[in-house]
Length: 176
Picture (cartoon, helix red, strand yellow):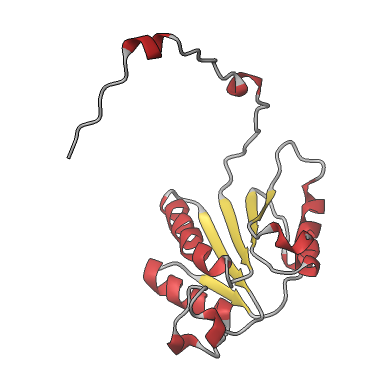
């Protein structure tokens, strides 16, 4: 095994470095110290099934910080044998609803109540309320579902800080 040779000082002195001023030019984000937080996972398949434990873990951390946290997993689909190798499911879960399966698994593991909704997402379920931050994490695989999720952002008007955040966590392959 050979030890790599050190970089000559002459090489280092010829380097130019630029100071990154992005932080100085960034716009400030206004935040509110919300007492209630709703975490929505819409789509519990290829992306959502892997993201689910992280959302429940986040919910647990926020709960331990004194926040009132509600978790919702939404997906009308059932686990199929083709899902087992690429999604976070096992053979014993084939035929079960994806949202229910993940909600049960992670509510037991993290001692957090997770509500499973076994229907397609509907924007009317998102009801803004006082001092509540709502985070909708979209892991859906079709344009119609994505469109219905973005409709919840219409409630973000006339506020100094957004109280509904939407994270789109699926691939762009739908747009090709």
